[in-house]
Image (cartoon, rainbow, N blue to C red; front, top):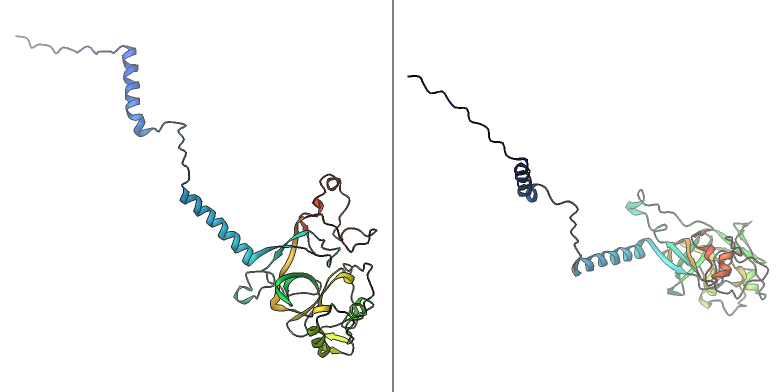
Length: 284
């Protein structure tokens, strides 16, 4: 007998439509696990606790900056015209004069220099802040003759000083004098000052500074209340960040508004509640 011959199975070919449906079904089965749906966005809103934490972080950072780095300050009087005007808002660098200590190599500390504009606690009322220009350092010999400053026997070149019309004041212009001629002079300072006068010069003691306003005839400064203690100095203003337009009670009409370059800007004539052209000016 002859052995039966193996029968070759005829391959079953599925119709194209069935193959397509099977492929789509298989892809759909694995897609949620392996392939995330495209363009799917999840919006997560912060909780109340998250919002409070963010707000506290901002407040703490702002307090740190205002306490240790910079401080806003507003010019209240005409004593620094025409460098600083009434209504100017300043940012004061509080770190520049800080004691160096171990941070000397890291932070840009500087000593107080002649000509620096400084903000300090008023010696007669430490709760009040005052801004003046340092004219004499510890050990310097200073006097004024006809309102002109002489420092260490040399006339001081002061392009920033303004001499607006004012009443005659011998104490102010012939400083120092032992004659008590101005009721605006602090009596304790007048008595103390007499011990620091040598040959017509006022000798600045250690850790003290002699400061004047740029508007020399309209400034109550070291001539009237004494030296500025080093520990009273808060910092140095470095920029005017805003300026409200406020009238000066001392300016002569034909003088320019300020030494920093104020002009009759067209913007100022339209929106005149502020001095827009003084914003972000560097103070020097």
